[in-house]
Amino acid sequence: MDAVTLKDVVKIYKMGKVEVPALKGVSFSVEKGEMVSIIGPSGSGKSTLLYMMGTLDKPTKGEVYIDEVEVSKLKGNELAELRAKKIGFVFQFFNLIPRMNALKNIALPMTFLGISKKEREERALELLEMVGLKDRWNHRPSELSGGEQQRVAIARALANNPSIILADEPTGNLDTKTGKEIIELLVALNKEKNQTIVIVTHEPGIAEKCRRIIHLKDGLIQKDEVKPS
Image 1 (cartoon, rainbow, N blue to C red):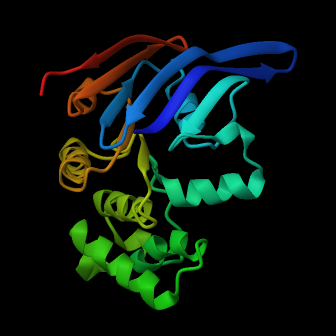
Image 2: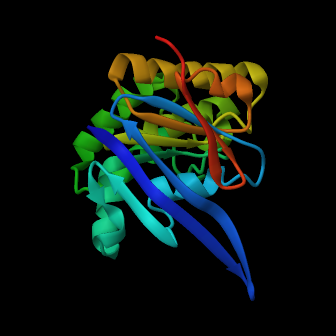
């Protein structure tokens, strides 16, 4: 079963009277349990593609399916619920809430699904332990290193047991050593938990950690390669 499918997705942004095509007809599927990287130069449409997959933006033309549900047909509340249940996001700049400690940042997505405070905190502690930060549960983002903040962000992305994790340049704001540790954590999640992961990156070394690499250029897929097992 596919976790996400795009069919002939076109995205055109209007800048005044000028139309700027970001995606020019992109089609592919990501199977459950796959770890895929999308690589390409700046302006190739990588982030736009991720927004389509994450239902943060709608295509001008084409269809997007999450767990075989066509998301373009969903209304606002339905879309928000699907996003909360099915998709976990990891961003380059972490996007943690400064006033909340690590535990509360991770627990936050669970509040949208009506999970009790006790369950939220237990789940958040389990996730903190999984990413190696259980002893840092009471630290706010400003008291954590960049790598630790990204680990918290990954734990937060997993809070609601999503079917897919979307990572937008997850190592882009980290030094090389820390970035390698974050990618290794994502690889481990994929192998040990069978977590579906899509990583957008411009770094070939990061892309190579994934078995499947989709090369994007000028809004089109140039190559979709799967390395031998």
